[in-house]
Length: 419
View (cartoon, rainbow, N blue to C red):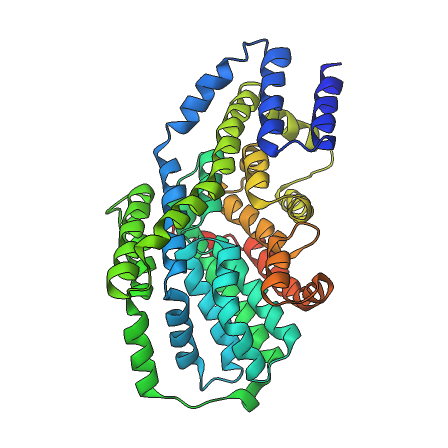
């Protein structure tokens, strides 16, 4: 009867179009009152418990740093450098697109922001160089997804909070998969691109000029990640340093960031984060309930009849996460599924850090799959193409990313070698 009531509550809330934080909060209140026989006011103490985590501060600070750099000239400088370095390589401009996305991803930490910042500049350049619309849209849209796997990454921070793993270890584990996926996309660009017909010449003067122009932008991820990995400062402290660094570079050195732009940047950052934090603290309360009631262990026991071991679990989880990525945004999926699936993965001998990367890569592909793939709609808007054409352009790249997913799934050393 209680189970029927819980399912009915979820269905009703979804049908009347309630936001996710209302749904998660209502589920938490129902579970505490009717299943755990505890007072609903305990959720309030759980909210304070969740809000007291220092790592939470890293999320708004990294987002703010990314917004500050996006409003400046960093994307143009990085693209110029990538184009200069890849000019003599066959299909060099397509390779520059992937490299630009990868480098900018390490600064913005956001997939849609990476796609917008790089795509709006490189798409006209690719078309002008004779690349097809299909290849240009596909490469830039797929390259934009690197924003959540190459650290620093907001989804990694949220997974670390929900699954109880180290943010630093997750950041380190993201480097190998980030390099792998970038390499696979570059390989596809070389094969599918125009090849030698678009091969330029090495221009030492242009390379040096581009390096001089973009050196401060390149140093930002090195400073942030180097400080974290060396233990010199925490992820939260590095996020604060990133904000200060971004502001000084863009406002006083590049002089592309004007003080009158700051109120809008702060407003956009706050608007983006408001809903995430409400869902996050309520999800922590629901996570505590599931832990106390041993729900993950019960799920493992119920799966034992049709999941025979580690391999079958990994295959099943991959299929489930790919489907979830089609219908749910990455933040919501991590908040809901990470505390359930991570303990189950550990039972099957899967390292939680490896599982975190696996989960994020799966949901990263979800940025490119309908009906809720964010990058599909972003690409449709900035490239002025209908959604059907964007989906057709992205399909081959999804295949490339799936190859990377399989390698990351069954070769955990790709994620864990730095650990």
